[in-house]
Length: 106
Image 1 (spheres, rainbow, N blue to C red):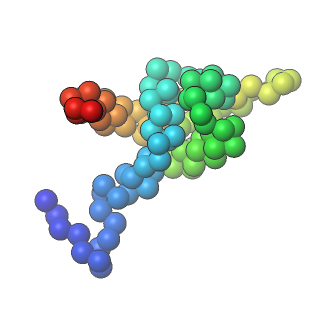
Image 2: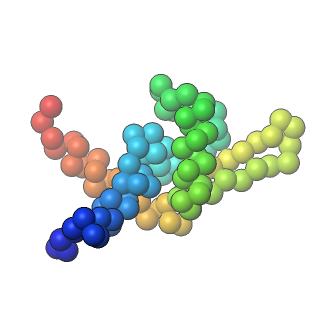
């Protein structure tokens, strides 16, 4: 395993945490693992998230290439979110986290 010093502070784990390190980001990915979702569906599924926070996290995730956003030219506007090919590579990571979490004694 490579040792990281102050000169080389950005380990791959740190890079990953910068992208998916927030609670809401991981939970959004979990919801999108089941398929395409609209904003309102995500908001209802993520109890406690504010619309502003959800919007910010979705924008961050789109900027990192984790999700794809599709806007339909309708009134009212319809927007759908889904995992990008890069985002789908996180599925085994989250499944491993889920398995590990299930084995931890509370």
